[in-house]
Length: 286
Figure (cartoon, rainbow, N blue to C red):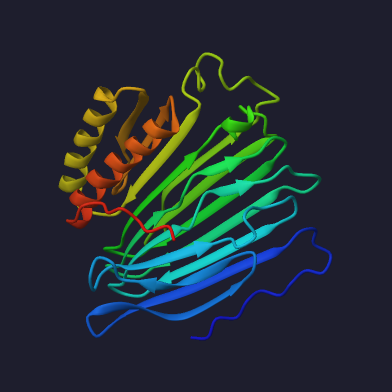
């Protein structure tokens, strides 16, 4: 299968970044069969720091960040039995937006018994920025996916705290064509103070983690472990719950980026060890 990039739209404000990667299993390992990218998105050749599996794929934005009108599209396809860990080189920085928002759309298709870990760096919305992100996941029988996302309140070193216009995130997942998960959030600081009661309160950093696919007994045990982490953690408030189908959702708030990352690593380690049978690793970012 040859990958054909979508046509550029001449009238579009901003840049249209596109990245596509198709993986398959061949001769005992996962290989990148086809790929294509167009700046401001770029794909780094997969590495194998853990041995034969999984293939580590890094997506980068060589421009350093995104501006209003940018459209970032990513498509990842995993063949039967393929195992991939996808991360980013650095934080997703959303610069001050004038006019159109920054839009990110990711589509992932996973065939039978494939495994994907989607572990991006944090989203950092600058003052006056407007960001919309959509992630669509299609899983076949036996596929397993671990996906984590974190959001900062802004550039704290610059004195920014919820000074962005909007951050809207949406995740839609289907298993064998049937709905498995829909999760959507919209943060509009101009409409409601994020630090008010029932929202962020004194915890300005937000994290989400999804475990999709796997055996019920494994997921039940992992959920219990994750609940213990959330209940005992200092500087973190959150919880874990089982989905109606095979999956787990974890959401937490943290008082600092250090506690946010600590919780992410703990959650990822429990999920990876329970569902995939291996410990979380420290990812290379250079």
